[in-house]
Image (cartoon, rainbow over all chains, first blue to last red; front, top):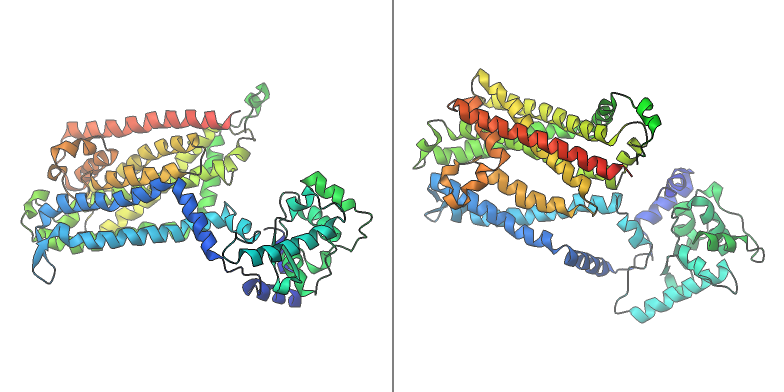
Length: 240
Length: 271
């Protein structure tokens, strides 16, 4: 996210603590990596051609090198007596195919997801699905989200708020509200309004670190607003 | 996006394609070192592994004479140069070119200026040609260091490589301009066209080793034409008329592909 750049550049002490919290996101890690796996499986179900075509590549190689070149090579002494060239290269082709698939998926694919598809940003904005502890997680998330919505606009936890607060991860004991606010297209100004309306405490409160230090520099934190004026709500509704 | 008006006719710079070419050359600076390392490292590895390693097996094998009396290293060296040019050309015209439509959307910005979509297409083609020229020249120097570059006529391998790579690249440019999805078609292209083309075009073994049923794959392959021309340049032994035929095939492929690519770019970028 672009908005995180000024936050990271500001101040020595605050920057360092933010860095530590970003490297070690205590209590923020949902431990649900298998949800990401499930997501990838669902995606690959639609692009099964890539998997199937991965089968053909070693077959092409085996045919071309084993048959075409094999006739010219003859037999190869593989330690336990001479074997045909096709038999000699077949295991190697299998291993190469596996290695190529893994390298492709972990380099270009990951970079694409990060740089262009912004997939990881989207993932981090959610609680990454649900698992066997669904009841507990739902309770935590619901509590956090309810608190945040109540703060955004008392009495009218409207759809507009949900459009901005796309995810809330359950904090320790459910007391701390940890929300990740997506900046989106509307930029930092809307975000300031939202944070002001949410009445999130000033920086220094550890509960706010994911929201505030992640997106805004310390000098640009929004002032607290009274809930009555609620200009932010109009702004949120207008933007969603 | 470009919207045609009469005013464009006066404002359009004549050298738009060179402006696009210059932009792409400046982009190239970002990965210049890595592309040079690739241009030198890949031939080194291939020549050592295939030419020297596998060549030792083949030259002492039962049919060492089937390469026309030259060592296996000398036999594959021209084909490796052409295959590398093909890889570079297709690689540069697939995802990098497509991303300028889809993800970075640079082409939409460029065509909002007086530069036209046709000039964008020409600039891409020029840039890929430049990259191929640099890569093939470096490849030739490495072959020279290995003593596998043939006689003085072997330097003709460089233009042959550029021609082969470009003849395929323009078609991939056209494909990219027609695609709307996330680019999965390129994966299919690589796996079902590029890899078989590299394997079954007489690069690593003469196509007479292939069964007749699939030998037509080599006959229609531009890489086979490039291989034959490059081998003819480095090792000799290619008749005049086959050479003219291969050259005409590659030139026709390039010319038709360039026309198709320009049409596709115009269809994509003019609204």
